[in-house]
Length: 470
Image 1 (tube, rainbow, N blue to C red):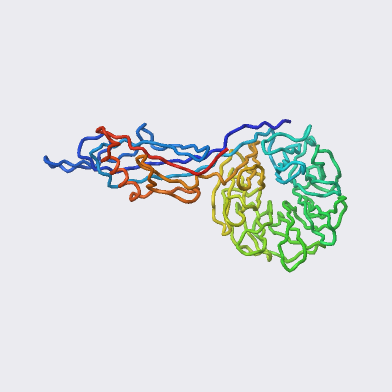
Image 2: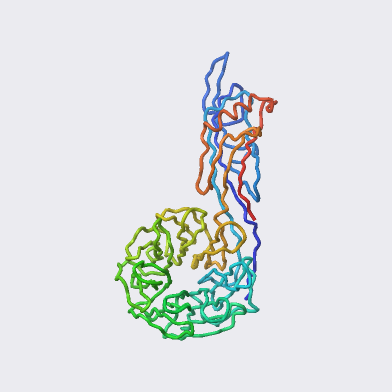
């Protein structure tokens, strides 16, 4: 099984939609709206909704800090009374094509001899370790025929230098893999399939990390660095997601958070004691993540559910907010991906979308794939600004998205005279309309200038973006 990289340059797209209303003293090939029949001074009102090449919108691709110019044809003897230009920014990702359905993804520094992070991927029947270009770093993948790898994480488990990869498999085994070549270091066998795994320090009296694993047998299990049982907690349903982090500030060290098909999120201290009970969210829980999302200094818990919602919970497992998608929420992650202050919640849904939500649960941006998004992770994979979002889909693709790359510090120069007739000093993530007041005067001045020498003038509209793509 080989990973193939489809190289697509990351670029900025600005969509421009145009509509002008013109008062014209002479006939003109635009849509006529009205006229005033005065033999001495006839006035005709026209609407122009197309650029000079007869298109109604433009895609401007920015691969560096640069300008792009488009043109609108307007009769010289015209007065612009109303105008509107709408801009929409879009970021296009690099796509790494796989040959199998993606179930789980982790991003971290697996091979510590390199400066970049790597991507560990659990797919149908195999685990792969990739670099940021999608190239496989192992001679061959770690494979188990007939079984899928539903959970994966990267962290330092053994006393050896560097990190390892923990992979939760459908065959009732948890594997610890050597990052350098994918060979098996340790194996832990359970009574049922494993759905998720997390690596971090839970027992504060030790310096080693522990491994938490969520199982279909109704057990959430904590193992030491030799894959020996420390504790487990059993319920009647399945645990689908697990994470480790500092949630409760009154308890020393980190806690284990697990989500179950019994509709509940469980919080455990280092000895496996459940604290506090928590609420029934009304649907099976598919994934959990821990991070600092809100403006306070404490971490929260992001929860993905079969009720199509992602929830943000506080340390008492109370719901702070929720956001609804169009299908099951398969995966959640927390990290700083939008270039804004604080961390965001990244969501992968069966509606084929990747969502990025801010601290109050509002949608910042989204990206459409062609399959269920079953895994999301956040990490710094490139030398470019900001973290990347890595999303794994049922469509057999891994999408690497850098949401820093939206048009930034955009301005419009009408007439190519060097004047900024309008500017937007932020990232264009949502549709932005340029008001008439910024357009009308500049176009009228150009029509009356020496730059317009014919009866019909091609008025230049110069759009600039500071953004630099790859």
